[in-house]
Length: 392
Ligand SMILES: C[S@@+](CC[C@H](N)C(=O)[O-])C[C@H]1O[C@@H](n2cnc3c(N)ncnc32)[C@H](O)[C@@H]1O
Image 1 (tube, rainbow, N blue to C red):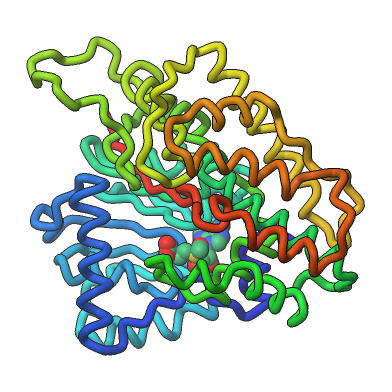
Image 2: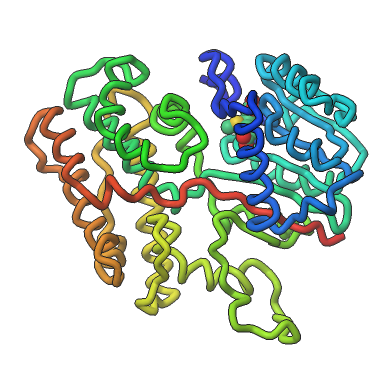
């Protein structure tokens, strides 16, 4: 499997099937995107009319259609030819075809232009590209001074719990002697493990798309961090503007006249990110009240990096021959020190599913997972959006 794109095209798989074919669905979809842009990424829809946007990886155009309805002129770039017919027919049905300035069946790598745009969008694929830093510079070069870049990514630390769910699926299938991780038998195990809990989420996509895109997709292992993204974007002349989920609380209780001297990611947002790590990891709105020092934080993040690398190794090829990932004590101590009892229990739940001495069979392992309440209930904050301003 060469790339995320070939994974989608070879499997004839639409990773984000968004149904906007009736009025209610369209209204709901529009409301979600408006909420994301206006309240999380701080991009007011009322200022978009007549402005130019370019969207990479627009799939069949459901999100672009919202911007067209807000009056933007769109350049759309999508390498998957299978998505284009639905895209064209959607814009035609909505009477918004004339808002498309250009439509290119290309990857971001191959796109070339000397034009610039008010809004540059790349949502849902950048973290899987081997040259992702270079692509961030490319996005920045396409933005006008004062323009905005919006992107989304699978966050390494927010993805912990989803990666653990991936690991549990792979371990269960191994113990059950299933010979193919993409098989119907494997999907049945995934349903046994997760369907009931998945149905309680306000998820936009169906269970099948989640299973294909997160639990068995080899490219779901290509995770990214704010540290890595924002260092690259700042080097390319951009500054962080908004995030979704909204975790940054650094403006709370401050007076606007107290302009921070250091507006960089490291100076302004990173300390807030550290206090929000329990939320990032678990998706639960709790802050780190333990006063974790920077040295301790570095140890926790290093332990997490090693654990996630271990899960990636374990769940790259099936049947897996790699050793079980090892849970770092720094993470267990950190979870145990949190005030929230469910977050404390998460550490114990993790010990059970990573236990190297587990001696039951596959059915026992599925039952073991089902009895871990915190791990079942928590999903982390795996998927993040951010907006950046191009400084000029
Ligand atoms: C997970 S989907 C996200 C679709 C949409 N942007 C969204 O957020 O709902 C990823 C999209 O990125 C596209 N894609 C994959 N590799 C790409 C690349 N190198 N350049 C541009 N788009 C790419 C895929 O074809 C697919 O349409």
